[in-house]
Image (cartoon, rainbow, N blue to C red; front, top):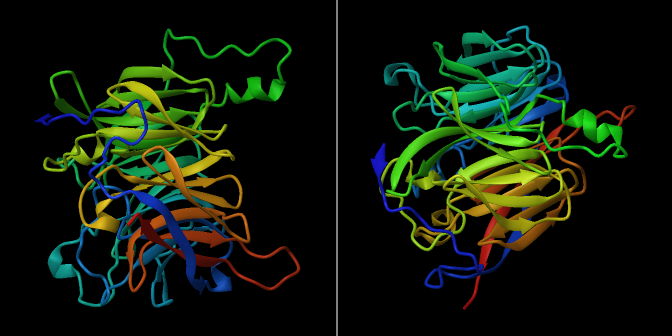
Length: 402
């Protein structure tokens, strides 16, 4: 645990008047990377270096590479570089890739060449396998009871190489390349699930029986004394979110609509502290199928914003990525449509409409020559047309008042 001054939420919108005010973002497609047709339809993507809040550094990547790990429904995994070159990783004979996580390499420095970077890649497939690739080769594999539904990095600085994984049976686990640290089953326990009225759509009732772990993330929450403790926040398709500490459930919050995505960061605060490890993740943002966004702060949910479409994925980018100093994180929200939302301090500050429904979305901290960007995967064209998936790089340029 660590001692830190806890950011407090404001109940009346913008609460950091000394910070630059965004009047919007300009989102522009800057680059399209066509992928080899031999890879097959892309079903998952993960960018490196990561653009998630707290990971951003001001170092220039003008002479470096952004790397995208892509996985396909054919079980192929490849690294796609910003110069459009592609390297296919060692085949594992796995089924369709459902989830990917690109991480800093854990290989010894002596084993890393000065050529293009090769991040570690964690892949989760439709057979429940979790594969860890180091230097492009399968380093380890683990198996969960059902297809993998979520992968996320562990933000605990004491376990930098670990990650959280969830599956469609409700299993949530904390792992690293060599072993499973703990495994648990999401369960409401004695708390009742939301009641579906007798006349309600039976499909809604069926969804409440779905045990899938929709999303998970690592988050640091503080008590009334300002002590920060690391938790895994997991969202169940059954309509609740649960905080776990070393695999033990410590807090459960029922929801009116099942959560579809969670993301750590600091989203609305009057005092931002990024001095201590983990202090960048003292809140989490929660999105659901109704388009509602909520902030989890000190074990309570507070309204943040509402978007028009059901939420698919939420990402956060540190304010420092845009203006050079700290402040509430910028939120990028992908939906079950062609629309991407950008939000800051509870306000929608930009939208982007693609010409297609992305099959996967991620963000990259610093694409060479572009800066912070969103990557959208355009799926293969309709059957009968010879085409392949492609990556669309969308730049995020802030528009500041004054």
